[in-house]
Image 1 (cartoon, one colour):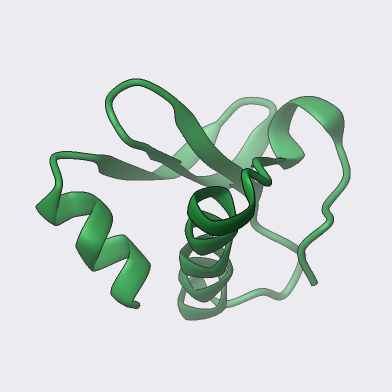
Image 2: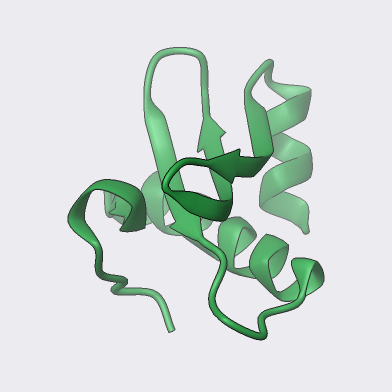
Length: 78
């Protein structure tokens, strides 16, 4: 999970836990911007959620694609 490691090394953070009304969400921010907000899918393992978060961070950095499943209710990230 190289993107998560790089984000944290650069002073960013990730958060994992309940984010009502969602039972579990994973978010990533770089101190200035929210890079990704993912909702844990039914049956999805935490490992799989973290892998999706890592991919979403990479897309935010490389393509300026910011995934927000919390507020828009959909995912562009398979």
